[in-house]
Amino acid sequence: MLGRTWKNVDDEAQKEIKKYLLEKGGAEGEAKGEYEDWRIRFSDSTFTYYTTGTLYSTFSKSYDPAVLKAWRQIDSIAGPTYTLPTKDFLIGLDETGKGEVAGHTILTAVIFPKEVFEDVNLLVGPADTKKRHKFSYWDEIFKQLDRLRRSGFDFVTEKVPPWHVDRYNLSKMMDVTYQRILSIFFRRARIKSCRIVLDDYGVGDTLNRFLKFLENQGAEVIVTTNAEDTFLEAKTASLVSKRTREAVMRAINQNPDFQIDGLSIGSANASNPQTIEWLEKWYNSKRKWPWFIKRSFKTIRKIEGKPEKVEKETPPID
Image (tube, rainbow, N blue to C red):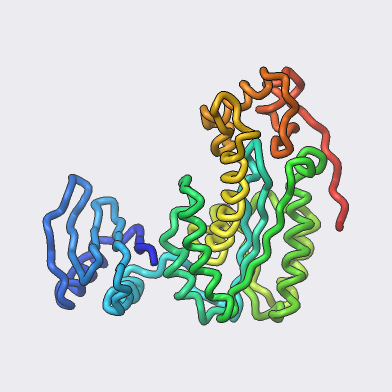
């Protein structure tokens, strides 16, 4: 279990939350730092309210039911972090690795029944998917999440390899892949019983038509940017994607065959100095680019002294 975060908690709500925690046996401690308004020790969890309007609770190592009950009470006061279920099944789609110069682009779709929404929220909701973490961070959450399979949680991941990214239009590949994954899910859940949330990467006409068809069949379809900030199913898909990609990148970074002067490629983000240094050293060594490099990316072509623009094909439907 991770901690919990509530953002944009207004003054009236924070006072009610503070009163509840103290009445239930919490002990107020001294605020630390200029940005802390108050902190309360409650069982083996610490609740801290910040001047920015953010409330944070550390996780309960003992899994004390009183802490979980307090979290639910805070949800009722401050409002839930994520949009509550509106259908019997929740489907989230997200990707990772699309902009990195190396490694697979990972597309993931998750599905789970509304009955396990709270269980998924306890595991995934507090996870920080917008920062870099070691593989073990993602893997530990994933292992706990995987235990929910017996309760109906499931997922599908697709790896788009670098050589396909170099050849085909990636957004169109994502359109085709997501449509195929959704079709798999509808073998187990009726279309009209599903809420489908897709993080918008620039969805094309083909997938838009399919999503419109699903809407006409009774599904709730939401395509929005930063979907993981509002929809738990999208955040869960993002986490599974990151765990899958980090496993690949960890193997690459640990392989001595892909190191030069003791340096590995790192995150593969073009803004990462380590990644750029590795790319330049590898190219200057006159060695052939390894399999995981996306040679069509402008970062690579700039190093090679080639024009940035690359014409790509439309991917086949299959």
